[in-house]
Image 1: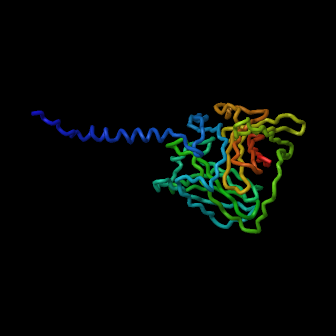
Image 2: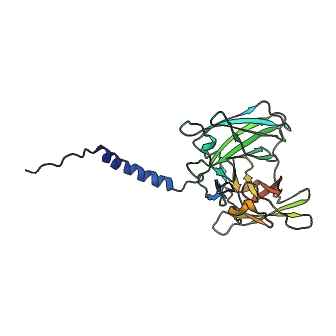
Image 3: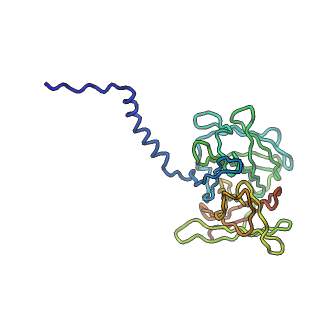
Length: 307
């Protein structure tokens, strides 16, 4: 008579065996490409030895009217909102599990924890701000800005959680009291002058079969000489692109610079950006450069895609 095998009774080994399929599924899911929320980021270290994600390969436009991240934001102004007056705000972010998003939960990205982009509906007033985490209340962040116009402003938060080098993008809005301006019909304009500087954006069409165009930023003085650019947030320039309905944005960085050394040097000459527009139309682009150690300049361009 054959004795039947004894049932498997080792609880520890049984738990490990049962957990293997879940581990395999997690590893597979963790490494699957995620679009459009996965952007390529390069791990670099700043002068303090802190890990800083710098994304030189971000070219895509993210439409936040159709793409949502599993985080909640409670956004509110502190006091009244009037143009040409400093306005204060606070917001609280909750992660998917309901816990607050603290400063310790956010990685450095281009030298900052959170990049907050605010733009009015006419796209004529743009702000790039870095909120500060509250010292007492977990998940609460503060910032202030001085709006130049009345009407609705769209707000976009761009950051990278510590546990995953994937960008998270969250949107909100606020309203400045007063009569707002009506959006105007835009035409392509790729030159802009400010004080002693002339800026130009050169559009290089996409290669056949590709959707990414290149944008070459030139910064010169009135004599035609390349001006000296200083690092700003870990790069020699930043650029954002908004669609006419302010549904989303693209956050672009130069493709042709050494991000590891950007904090220790200056730059002269053209800077090239990649941009993958989602469709035809005129996009408002805002470039941000530092022409002196303490002086930042915001440069507007209007870029037409298609006929």
